[in-house]
Length: 292
Ligand SMILES: Nc1ncnc2c1ncn2[C@@H]1O[C@H](COP(=O)(O)OP(=O)(O)OP(=O)(O)O)[C@@H](O)[C@H]1O
Ligand SMILES: [Mg+2]
Image 1 (tube, rainbow, N blue to C red):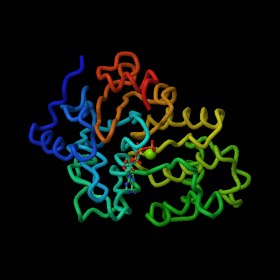
Image 2: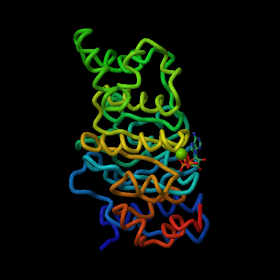
Image 3: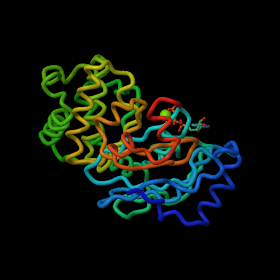
Image 4: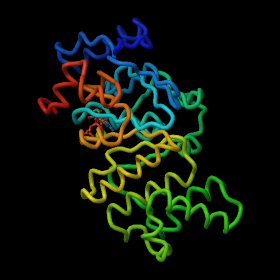
């Protein structure tokens, strides 16, 4: 049975409510906290009281959520509700937006990542990201994979690097398709292959968490099926947070689902519960197609 999250302090809620009046209409002001259990038994990352501002506009309001080991968490919600903004908090990608300000606490294996002194380069190797549009480097297939391990000093010989390139491509289910043309440009692959190349590139630097922002939205159904299959396999070794507009995709690939609305995390639960027995009217409206 779901309970109102106890991880959010009343003072945080009132602070968030004050801020929320700036961007929400009156019907949303009585939001009292996320429904469902924001925590999980074996958390890899823990977000607590996360707020994000773009200049004076608040885009994320007091969001608390765990990302577990070996699980896929789907983040769903209408356009503009803050899914990408929240995902970008998890590896400090919002740092590259000058007007963005992130507060609250986000830890990976207990270590705070929002602290100013944190070096984002190794953080982004630990928490990798795959974007909506496949974005291979303008380099060969081999170099797309080898680049990260090389700059992070993960291998000590060419033979080791060759092996890492092969294993990464194998894990991304791409090896058989590209093994005979590793020296050809990554941009010459099909869209679905490029997206798996980007996943292989992320895996090559041994991340703990993989963030995916609508990774299949530019792919056809066959390529989408391959990437979804891959996500399911990757779960054995990584934590995955995926933003998707496809309810079917969320239902197929994730174990937990988080529903966002106007910057609030409205509800989180097992994917089965969210889709079959949503507790909040807004979640129900969204998943039944009445909204968004
Ligand atoms: N770089 C930015 N500068 C200013 N405002 C931004 C920026 N990026 C996002 N926003 C604002 O923050 C809010 C959340 O945007 P975000 O892109 O996170 O939503 P989203 O849920 O990912 O939407 P979509 O489903 O359309 O991708 C929106 O109001 C958006 O206009
Ligand atoms: Mg987005």
